Amino acid sequence: MGAEIIAVDFSIAANYEGDRASARGLIERDLIYPDWFENEMGVVIARAWEDFLSRNNMPGLTSLAGVAGDEVFPDQPSWVYANARTAFDYAKFVELVKADAVPRWEEVEGYEQSLRGLEQARCENLGE
Image 1 (cartoon, rainbow, N blue to C red):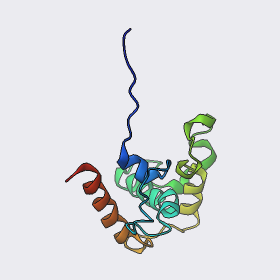
Image 2 (cartoon, rainbow, N blue to C red):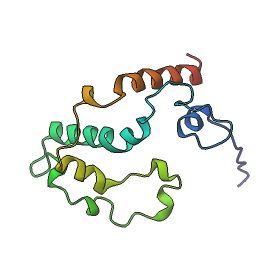
Image 3 (cartoon, rainbow, N blue to C red):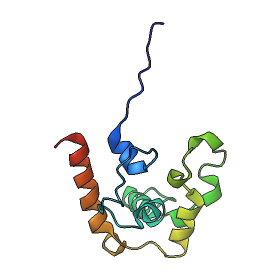
């Protein structure tokens, strides 16, 4: 229909994901805690989800502890997450909550440093 696709480099995403040679990694720039990505893809998402469910207060679904983790997204196509580092492990989030292994926000290792660094990266990448 006459549409033209133009490839662009959205540096804020590339820098965060570190998925190309031109990326200026956040860990390498000492903006985020060295284990931030592991924390984010585990306890940070589990804490956010658990807080959401608790505050939503839906009868029968106030915690991930009451969820069957393998049924959250049971037929997830393999192409949903091409980058394994950013793939959600829904069952892992549930298991973290069930094991009482989800710290409060202020107890997440590197949380404050990483939030400050993410904000700095956002400002640098968006010219603010």
